[in-house]
Image 1: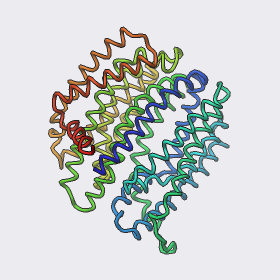
Image 2: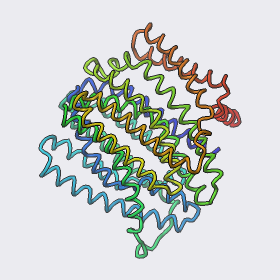
Image 3: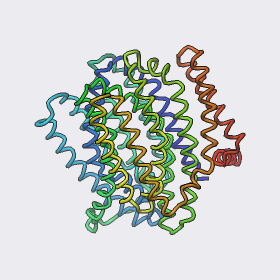
Length: 474
């Protein structure tokens, strides 16, 4: 019951994060325009490499270690402070390097880069991994709700034109920093006094570096896509791909809600030698991933042509063919998150996870060079689909040594069939209704009802279990 409750907490927040862009992105796209969006995309992509260096795999590693020792308060406190001090050290190193590059290497957009140094401070202040490892998701979710709402209000109050791009970046960066800082007020009660002289901070460096490698690779095909587009084509093309990528990644946060909850649970089961529960959690996670990713794919494919120009504005019509292609990456990404973050990482198979991600990043880089040259943003979308599919296939090869992969797809045809029925229905309404916010929600609502109804008629076991759990709570 606690697992399901935590999933609902995260699911509600992730749904909220889906709704917020429906309000902010159309506004921001219009007031900043393609160039403003492109500059923000380009500079943010560059700054994310320094954010990545600051985090150094600590978020995932910290969550896993806290899950391993959450019943031993003394050990828990020792591990928390060792990992947190390591986080501060890596953040300081990253900040110094970022400032050096801003002052002596980067030629353009210096003012925007300076504002994004706030994100480095956010990394040092972030202790969400501690609460996630304890499965105290309510704490982090409530914090996220509050600061997300405040940032939206500030954006509408102060961002009015292209010249307000600096204000927009400042608001986004500060909301992240203040949100992370606020979590420190909840730490009291979970920790006890420790002897700081007996700390061994550096023992955590090697395992965090092992998790740092796949994160670097992930960021290569997430952020380098946009940097390469901005350099080889134009910042406008980078903005078009980023707009498509935002929609895709935004929808995949529903899967992230699941992996965030399941990861500490699987790690704790592994620490206790409970292999049976690990396999049960994997099958459960896969069932939910399929149930969510298929309607996301079919739903967006059915409304994209009318939704994109309404959502981003007519200046972003080039996003339509890009998103049509990138949507094919949704299902592989969903599978990859379950196999990697929910299964391989918590059971200590970080090396196998890293190899899969690095190979995928190499594939992405090799595909990007010719595809961007010939097809710009569309080429990057194609490269993304190819690389994400390769990552998932590599992970399946590792998982198949311990788990029957075929058993994970026992009922996969049911969501696919339900998604196809939903696609046909929504496409019909999309052709016959004017594109506006009301009709959009009508189409989403009707599509969702049809999808769930078909799954219930087909007795899809994952949905039936969720339904029974909800009814049991009443």
